Image: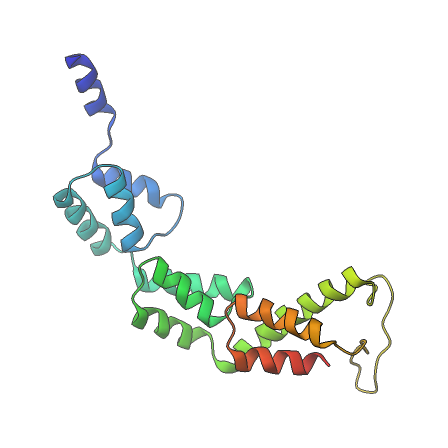
Length: 181
């Protein structure tokens, strides 16, 4: 019995080693790291010392993490409302999240990304309904825009729900749907 306790003690990593090991897989927020270390059974004193070490050496930097997260989320077609919500779930303070979103995500950018998401949703709707054949070359108007069948209210509602779920403001969603016509 005593040998098993000694063996377990030898196998358990130090709090700092566990934190550094987990950081090898990607950036973490302070909150995520604290929860992880608590789950692994480390004492609060050890965790506090470890967190001070990680923050002092910039291994954990919530502002840097937030900027990276916002950039990545924008590339995935997520709106600012969803990004803010996801950051809050990860323990990022509202002010830090708002700063990063304001820095990277202005109103024009939101509307452009919303339009891209709306166009993708429209293609999905129209290809599944047979109204728009991806293989066929569409007809174009005098300004070079593809001529699409008129959007039904049902299709507009589907696209609006998709945009809302992606976290776009109602203004950006409305603008994107109107620009689809």
